[in-house]
Length: 267
Image (cartoon, rainbow, N blue to C red):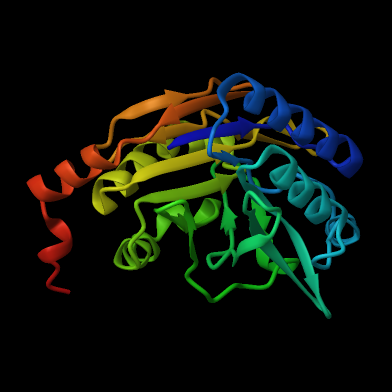
């Protein structure tokens, strides 16, 4: 199974972001013919105040991004893990991952559980809960016979979610993100590799890169695919780009047999 990731620099213009996402999906599909393509968090729109965030929210299945990703998955006959975007349901808004199968149908929907409410080093504050409601469901789906688990960005700091995904059979875990530059330079790689080692899964961390919101904040980029032993097997730099890796389920089984941590939990 081949996995490709698309690292973006999404801004506030939804139309432009969707055009860029489509161009990148088509390009990496043409080059690599992957089974699964993954986009970053908030690929359809990133930045802006609450009104801007809400204006770019979508109801499903009639939203613009929803219809585009469904059509691309069907046309290219592959699975698209469409990062995340703002979902509107009644008066509530969620940070939501959608996954589309090779026939274009929605095969998974994950609403971000852990919301990013912090005062970052350097004095910048983030309050995701001011605009976004919390999800509650642990979600997996299948690409062929491979079980894939869903997570988003700040979730990475809560290993209990990833243990729950492993307990549900996940062999690959995907984390779309818009990880800040300040925390990303120190924590992104360390935590991604830790989650891969703890769960003995292929861990796919896909980030936004460069500046957003008229230069008000920066994302770390460095999207990566990590094997179950914790080695980085593919990685982007800090700009817009993509990378691909082939996962080896025999190697995954070898790692789990060698160090059977899933059989040894006490707490």
